[in-house]
Image (tube, rainbow over all chains, first blue to last red; front, side, top):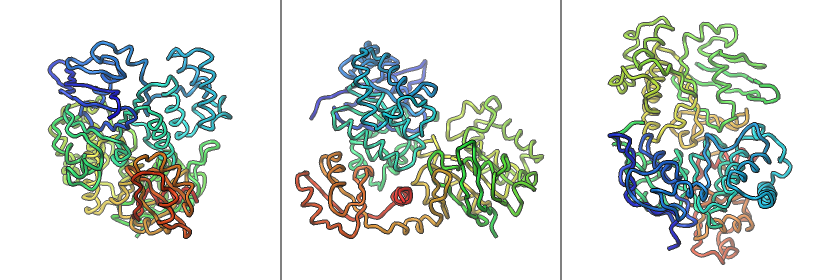
Length: 246
Length: 299
């Protein structure tokens, strides 16, 4: 088995009396595309925030990109990439300015920034759009650019929070190809999605219900285990009896 | 009789052609789905049919009434659930319902039979402010409010976006029940897999309709041979398959890739050409709505 990039044990987060995340444990391996699913209110966002170094667990242990989830949040943030559908790029900056901004935030030198910026634009065939305002780009282009920028500092893991909502099926596939390519190059991808058919693109999938990880396996094996025809069925079987709302 | 009749409807916002000469019709008690991504023109179409904006060209009628001339009458006959949360977040569940009833000049108890199957599920939370509801509960309240005046036509703009799969399937069950009560429903969704829950669908992209039919009829439009392929290295497989003879295209499709083939394609020689890939499998497969959509987009 390849190296673990995320390894957490009994991760728990409480807010007062409420246990948002209850004793979750799992490993994510290098180069995997790991799907992180859950019903509304299952604790997905809270768990994701802990893994990204944005909030510390109440108890538990583990590492993300080699850093301790209980106390090295700042180091984790530097070694991961993050992209969400809601926020990832600044609309009022140009394509080139967005690249420069994020490269600057991650502390890349001017030389490295210039080099990676050229590479990134060439790879996306975006070189002619360097001075275009991001808001003028079609949604699908924005998503591709956002994903490429999330990897500008060559993180070991990229977290994708519902990355492909609203795009057409052709663009969605081009986006998944970028994800495959990144994973093939050794980057680990951690992705949340509401599209159950999208879960089928992942190497392995975990499903959270009421703060706990109730299932974790490859999509093929999950479907066998639950005797279901699709991931949507698997999900509904698990989430139907959820006690918690949002 | 057609309850919704749309003829060459166009609408532009500046240079952007949001709707480009769209035509279709919806029969009484039909559950009709508009399936397409953002930018397809779905919301513009809803705004036109609910008389919130006027078209640049073309005409449309809802329940036999013209969307421009008879806009006032249309408004009292249709229920509209916009894509974004349409309720008053600082009013309680109960207050929202009473408020919408008052706007339409009806009493909650008069339409209660229609609303009850949905509203009962959120009634235990009737004193809760709407902004504190879960995504699924918000949708149930919004649907209750859209039904409070007993509309004959219901317009639902992406009611299942952003809510989880369980709430989604509950919502579709509710729509099926409403349809059985004689309500005509026009619903939009970006989720291709929801197409089969509609009687008929229109596949929409960039202001145009790519195809209209029953879900089964849409599937039949796919006239190429389709295969499912797998190998240990799925990324390498994608690249290699595209180079092989007789391959029109190959794209990721969940755990497998889908391969569209022309007449020159031969499974045996395909395997030979990709001989270096370990655990290569290829099996014929049935197209899905998404395969048809991709196919139509590329034409």
